[in-house]
Image (cartoon, rainbow, N blue to C red; front, side, top):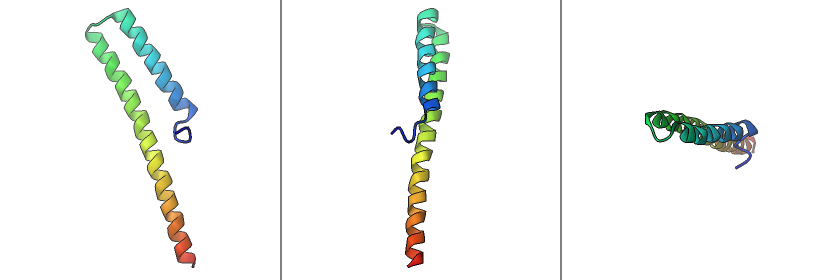
Length: 73
């Protein structure tokens, strides 16, 4: 899993989570908490989408290499 998540992505997840928890204690359970939760979820979704694309790109690359090997025979 570390090959798909770079240090920057993990750092963004951590910072966003810390800021979300901090906002929870500062703002309390108010309407603003929903906005903070939305920001957190969007950040996580973007990072998970990047992970999914990384996995797909590796699979496509492997498939293309296999096709190239078959054509070379």
